[in-house]
Each structure stands twice: as C-alpha cells, then as structure tokens.
Image (cartoon, rainbow, N blue to C red; front, side):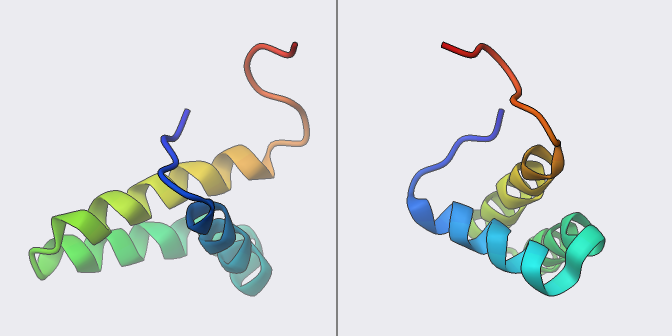
Length: 67
C-alpha cells in the first residue's frame, strides 16, 4: 500500500490518470526517474508513491481489509 502524506498525492494520481489514461503509471515512473537523475530524492519518492497509487486506483475492486 502506498503511503500518502497529504491529499495532494491523490490529486496528482487522479490528474495523471485523467491526462494519460492507461499510461499514467508510466508517466509517474518517468517523472520519478527524472527526479532521481537530477538528484531530487524527495520528488523521486513522491512520484514512486504516485505510481503505486495509480496502480491501486486502477483496480476495479477494493484492496485490503474491508471494514
């Protein structure tokens, strides 16, 4: 499960899905790679979490324990 530090992560994931559709995860991974390449570890971690969240949001059912 991705760790979310604020609602902005969900907004970022939603925006990528809206803009890139099925390729949203690849875009998030690309942004993470660019951030890593320039030495920005904070943005690298952010976009990796967004990549995981995009995958989680694309699943058509609940994941994990349902209460």
